Amino acid sequence: MKISVELTLTPLHDDYEPSIIHFIKKLRLSGLKVMENPLSTQVYGDYDDVMRILTVEIKEAFELIERGLLYMKIVKSDRHDYEPHF
Image 1 (cartoon, rainbow, N blue to C red):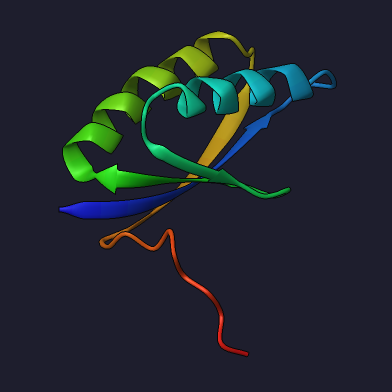
Image 2: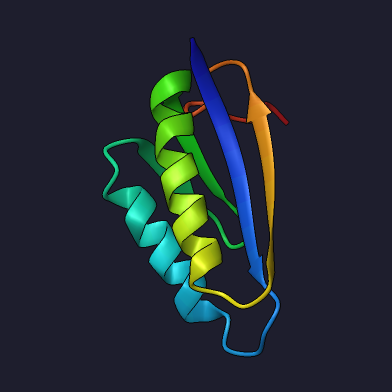
């Protein structure tokens, strides 16, 4: 089953950018389809592969920050080629 996941990592401290950049770079190396925009990162692929990789990478991201939030939305379909029609 294919899924699309939208992630927003929000470290709750002043020097937040290095943590976010590290998280995104690790996702890029995962072999999954990864797309970024200024507000979130989207990951696309097979459910089992995506969730296995996210489990590892989210845990590492949380271990590297003192406090933080991760917002995650999961859609049951591969939406990487979505284009708005308006």
